[in-house]
Image 1 (cartoon, rainbow, N blue to C red):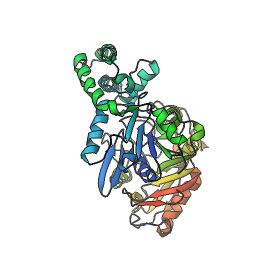
Image 2: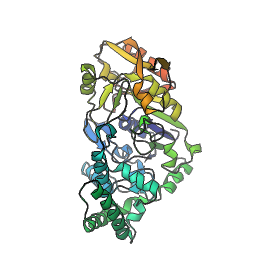
Image 3: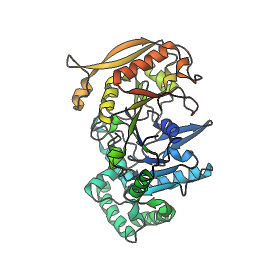
Image 4: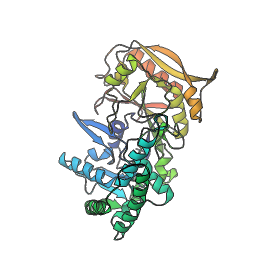
Length: 425
């Protein structure tokens, strides 16, 4: 397998965890490159469900090496909990996982600031964050006041932590929120440092040494293109770059060493949290998609907003990421629908457009332009070969690919590993 970046092409929740799990069989090293525990990758193996927030999904494959890169913001307490969960399931983690010493720490004051800041916003201004402290951590990173994984095991960490907690308490008090106890946090993170010290490493060297040795690297993103801080529906975005460009800045691997981009995209569209969503279905059809697709957040449990496939979003993701191969997911969710609608363009102020506007106000005014295709009204989750799909199902998928560009590599017709049709991978 060539060195591969895997990205989400919509607003997250596209099924990246499952596709990563499939591709890991061909990889030697699986590297997470951005985001934090606000992400949730769900993988079902032999009927058993795993939800991973920080540890790369490759850990579920015996013998595979996993890396949490410098672009990830790491909640050390959440990471310890996840490692323990995996070990309880009989999965060996130590010796197979390392965490970048350059990755910034999500600490309890970040969580508190995240929740207090969101609560202080008026209804129309809320971002819809997970409250996991991701935004405040990236803010500290950019302001150059953050603490990193490597700092966690340094002697002066308690003093540096105390200074940051004092500053955070001032901000929390101004927002009318409860302040935090410095001594308690120092104790908690001293214990965390002991637990995580064996995992902390210079992952820039780990990744590049693997590349020099000819090993195959799979770079794993979280969230989706439309939540990218630069290219998404700003300000209703995450605080990092889930696009393919973030793979290099989040790992230290040269762009010259990335050989393939795989985009994961649902056969319909979902979104969690606030922000514009042109194809959203606010009726019984949307609720039907939500229930059939089990569209509830893996991290928060929040119901996802559901709508028809948006080819404008797909084309935009193709452009921004340079997708070579597509992995389409959840085709089976559409099995019972007699008619399917595809958004091929937008109508904006009386004009037809086929590109993504940067202006949030303009995007909110966009109305979807639809074409319709017949459904197949047959069960697809038992199909094991693409050629055996109903003719109407193949026609639908092929139309989506034609509209957004690129080639079809994977088609998922169910949640398990075995319900994956591989075409070009």
